Length: 433
Image (tube, rainbow, N blue to C red):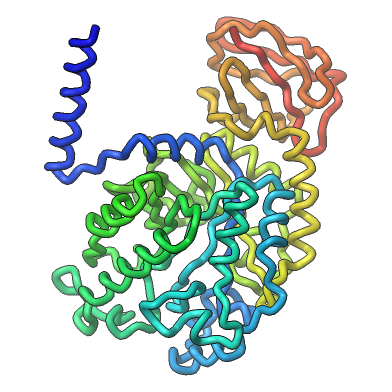
C-alpha cells in the first residue's frame, strides 16, 4: 500500500513539473479549497465607488462626457466621504445574506481608492479625506467573516504609459511605455495582496479595450499566485477562461445567455462561475437612475444563478459621501430576510443536472434536491426531467408539509395543486436515495 502511495505521489509530482514546464497553471491545494468555498458562498456584494460618484452620472462619466483628464482629476479635491463607515457597509452585506464583497480598488479613470505608494493619484494623498477606506473595509470584513475581493482595472484613461487610444503594434501601444505600465500594475497588485488582510480574489476588467495587446497575464497571474496561492483570479474579458484564471465571470447575464451582448464568444468552462448584475441600471452612483430592481427580481436572479451553478454578485454604487442609498438598503433587507429563511436551498449547493425549466430551476446538496418554482405554470403539476436516482420524500421547505409526487423513468411529477404558493419562490425539498 505504501509503495502504491509513493508511486502515486511521484506521478503527481512528475505531472505537476511537466505542466509547469509547459507554462500550464496548476492550482495549489489551497486554491482548490478556496474555489470550493467560493462556490459555497453563492451571494456577494459588488461595489463601484470612486471620485466619479461626485458627478452622480455613473463610473464612465469621464469618458461619456469627454471630460479632459486634467480637468477630471480635480474631482479628487472634492472627494471627502466623511459618512463612510466600514462597519455599516459590512453589516449591510451580512443582513442581505451576502458572504463576500468585491470592491473597486482602481477603475478605468485610474484613481486608486487605496493608499498606494505607486501613484499620488489616490484617496489618501489626493483628497481631503486622507484615509484608506479599503483598509478599514478589509479589517471589518476579516472581523465579521466576510470575504474580500478587489476589482482592478487593466484599462486606464489617463496614464501616459498606458496611452489610451494609441495604435497597438507588436503587442504594445505605439505612444505609451507598456513595460512601465505593466510594472505599475504588478506593484499595485502586490500592495493590495500583501498589505490588506483577508483578500481572496482579484477581479480584472478592461481587457476588452485592447484585444491585441500583450497583457503579460502569465507574469501577472503567476505573481498573484506566488504572493498568495489561495487568491482566485478572474477576468471580465468576455471570452473563454485563460490559463492562470480560477473562476469565470459573466457580465449582466446568467451563464449561457447573451442578452447583454457581452457573451457572444463566451462558452461556459469548468471553473467556478459568477454572474454580476446591477441593482438599478448603473454600476457607479447615478442620481437620476430610478430603475430599481425589486426584491423579487433579485431573489429570482440569485436562484437562477445558483440553478446554473453560479454565484450572484449584485452591484451597488454608494453615494459620494460614503452612504448607501435607502432604496438599496430597504430592498436588500427584504432579500436578506428571504435568504435567512431559505438559505439552505442556496448556500453550499451546486447546479443540478436538470436543465432550467419553464417553471424554474433545481439546486442540489448531497442527497437533497431543491426544486425552485419561480414561475408557476398554472397546471396541477410540474415535471422534472432526467431524475434517475430514486426520490424517497418530497416536502415543502417553508413548512415541512408532505408534497405528492410520482416518479417515472422519464422523470418526476410534482403535484402542486393545493400547495401554498410563495410569491417569490415555492421550494420543494426532494430526498434522493
